[in-house]
Image (cartoon, rainbow, N blue to C red):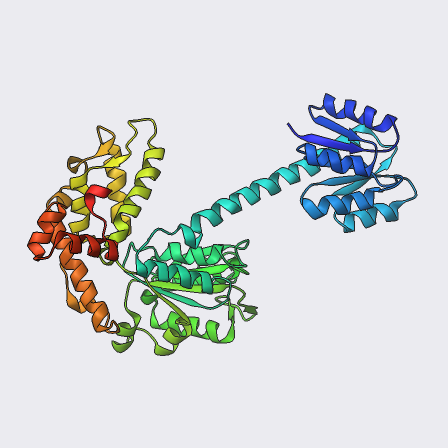
Length: 460
């Protein structure tokens, strides 16, 4: 129930107004001066302030300035006498929701209060939703402790406040759109739209209209003007997914938009400024597409201002327990009506480590969701996961996957880490047995496990 603070130095007004509002179902608090009102705000949860402008000592205007300094959204309605319209208008300019003349009709006052309280409630709800979005897509909440993911988080933190165009490459299911949203919701554009377009989902003529919009009569079926995604994303972020699927014709048009920072609707001649930030993503290697003549070199360099290469899950295996735990909590909460599933069996985790993960993080999420649904106990067991995973489709180690930019010590460390993991898998995570397989002492193996931050299944 909303609480209204009534401030007036005239003794009768607070008493009478309290009775009026309490009859309408509101709680009320009264104060006879600005100083007392500030004390009441400190000790009560106030949803609206109704105050007289003219009061001895601290008047309504000064009181409002103190309130707005601490809670700029709190609605304030000013009461003023006839003949002081200027004071009421001045109050509104300085932040008051509205003003009302004394004496007033109760119905008029109640209506003004309801309007102000509804607006305040909507504002608080919007801020709550905004905080949820920021929390969901904050770079710090992207999951991964691996070195490569930590570097990606740091880059997101640096690039988000800028207006730089971003290109994200990575296999399907690696989280390209999540990175794009993290950049958007950690930028100054977070209050504006995030608009996503899948460039592979529409035919060329439909995609052109979807991106740029069209004028009425531009083509058969264009019965009215339509704004495109470039316009809808104004002041926000436009995310072009699967940019590698753009036709040569649309590549030329997109290049012109990026060069000129403007565009025209299909069938139109009016130029519209581009006020959206552009983030593009693809599961293709655009440099290879350029060599094949499938993607324009000049467009690539326009897009590739800041570059992200998202690793497949098979190259960030140390993140698997974190991701699995996250998805387990998520789907256990969504399926709270059945058995609370809160564990993953050790043999299942070993299968996770040995699997190639062609579908990347999206595949892992689907498997955990399936496991939570099918589990007959509080633990996801091997019979709860797909048969192809139980078949231990083992990942293969290919030295050619190691970056050419890696130094010799880095390359040797990658290979050594792989051999230790393989030995641990063969030894069912018994470190003494794994050390014997590797021909080293158990103490040395323990040191290397700690140094490489290798997750041993029995510790999960």
